[in-house]
Length: 374
Ligand SMILES: *Cc1c(COP(=O)(O)O)cnc(C)c1O
Image (cartoon, rainbow, N blue to C red; front, side, top):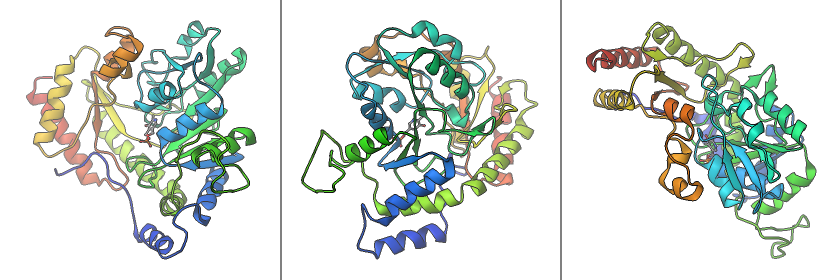
């Protein structure tokens, strides 16, 4: 491969900080855990932050803390990473999927109301590809109907809508730190909320249901081991301190792609709305509506042959084989999701992607479109 889809941005500062923790006696539940959570609260302005082992664990703990389970329904989107939906199933509740808005690619606000039933407990919207569009509308809708809102901000650390940060619209919100996210801890996640009750429950649930008195072998409730080690936490602290720098770089790469690809009539190129300050997660272009999935797949294969990594993004959740079985959905149930999903193409995207590499990707992409007769 000449150009990869994603690369983490790790400097000697991260390596030095991790090394220091490794030389300390506290590899887990040490001082870096609380410090990382404190840094996160300060960054977002939320009362509480709870670090956990993954974004998926974060979503599950939100549902558990809110006591959402068997007999409850949660409204979410089929156009997302799988765990937005599997976490609801793991909690024992029923995901109720609603199709997306074709422009923002987020849950269509207009589709929510007629899916609300007596069983509906929460709305779980996702900031797809980092885009916080409609978060204020979902918030309003949840308030109107007496529902909770869990904001899956796992792709949106650093984004704002009308100046308000992603992760501050929900009653609880989650972030994720896998290496392709805006910041990484290797693996990791974070829950944020202003509720002490839910936050304290999350602290207990991530640590085997232990109580607040700290007794190691006293377990007050059914819990999990979703702890994040101090090695991961210190890495997260350094990365979080560089978030603004990352955001500038990612905005540069997005702008460069936009400048080179916007004129191509075969492509739909993503753009942030005026009221959005976008912390780009990935850069996903798509073929116009009239092209079949086959063309997109051929284009990905062509780019691979030329040494450029590209990917489809996402496969609709409701069409994953085990989901078809679990939820009984079939092709055609969510036409916008299916149509968008068949034509997406994620391009190489990371902080240090050079202008020369962006040139190469765009040049090769256009060559592929020409040669394939698209
Ligand atoms: C990355 C991501 C998650 C969580 O992923 P983990 O790999 O468990 O950290 C959840 N939801 C969305 C939308 C994501 O992109």
